[in-house]
Amino acid sequence: EQHRQEVNVASGVAELVARTSRVSEPIFAPFVADVVARFRPRLVLDVGCGSGVYLRHVAEAAPESTGAGVDVQAGVVELARRHLAEWRLDARFRVEVADLRCLPPELTGPWDLVLALQNIYYFLPGDQPALLARLRELAPGGTVALGTAVAGTGNPAAAHLDVVLRSTVGSVGLPTSEEMVSALVEAGFAHVEERRLAPWQPLRGFVAR
Image (cartoon, rainbow, N blue to C red; front, side, top):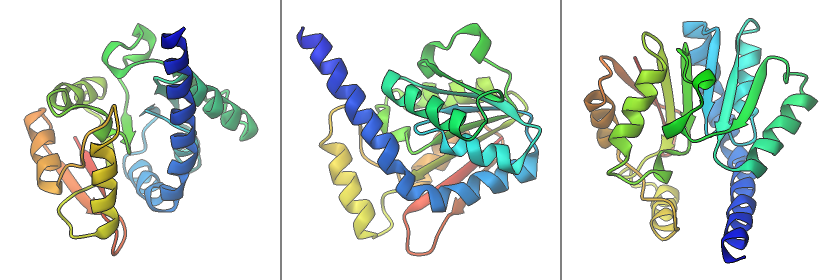
């Protein structure tokens, strides 16, 4: 009974996070659209897809694209499915409950583009190298677009978020830009590009190939 209550609480929190994360959509959406327009991917995977909104931006930037989103929380997946149905995109993009570390065979790619937005801090530092290497494996010859707030910018909002994350069960603090670039290189990416997504904001986009 206690386990079931913990699962329900986690699911409710995850759905709340998926909804509130849309606050950053005006900043991350142009980044996603630009990456899609630049590389024209046909097959796209959104890891930790949340509300599903970035699959919508993929669809708008590349009308020929198809793909999938995955999330570990069933409540979040149901939310994304409802949104995709409302946007009439459910025939192009499926959403499944799945963990990146043990994806079912039909979701292992190869993908042309893998998105990982606002979720790197849910993986412990010791797990992050394997996570990034896994992203690279899913898009051999393709592109990984990762988005996150970063520490070390002197931004008060980022400092506050870093404290909140460090005190939240299941998450860790924010990486610095330098740490993120170094980790992607160590994961085997030959080319890593960092983008500042908005003035006076700690949000960064990383394009790795």
